[in-house]
Image (cartoon, rainbow, N blue to C red; front, side):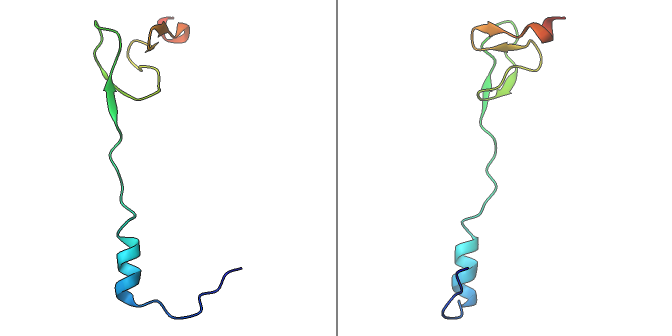
Length: 61
């Protein structure tokens, strides 16, 4: 296991931690022109069940 050789200053510690930020998810519009809902990229639409040009059969039932 790696062990630090010297103490890291408070300034350097906080500077390193500042890079860890939460990023908002990228939302895309549904490919179905009739739906137009906001969807996470590379996911099927929760409203109409469409993924790109394909339709999810489970959502239609």
